[in-house]
Length: 168
Image (tube, rainbow, N blue to C red; front, side, top):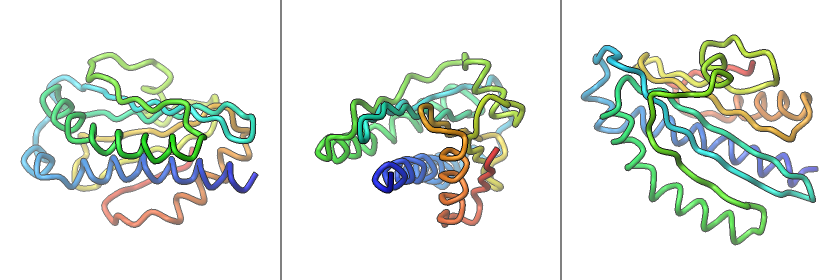
C-alpha cells in the first residue's frame, strides 16, 4: 500500500505543479486581469495499475478563454511526455494524456470546481493571483479514506504560496 500512496501522491503533486507552473508563467502574467470571456477547460487523464489495482486520475483546469487554454496546453505537452516516459519505465502507468481545450466540461467536474460535488473526495486548486483559473484533481479506484488521506498529505507538501488547495 505504501507504493500506492507514494505513487498517487506524486500524481497529485504533478497536478499541482502543472497548475502552479501555468499560473506563474509569462502568459499568465499578461492575462491575470482578463475577465472570463468564455471559460475553457483542459484535462489530463492518468491511468495506473499499482499492485493489481486500476486507478484513474483526472486533472481538469479552467481558463478564462480558449487562447489562454491553448497556450497552457501547448506549454505542458513536453512536461507530460517527460513524465509519461518516467512513469512507463516504472511499469505502473497505463497511459497519460492531455486533452484538447474545449468549452465543454462534464457536469461532475464543473460541480467539483464549484465545490459542490459530493460523490468522492477530490482536491480543489485555485490561484490567489489569478482568480480566473482553477482546477480539480480527482482519483477513481481509491477508497474514500485513501482519497482523503492522499489529499491531506499532499496539501501539507505544497510549496507555492499563491496556490490554495482544499480537500473536499
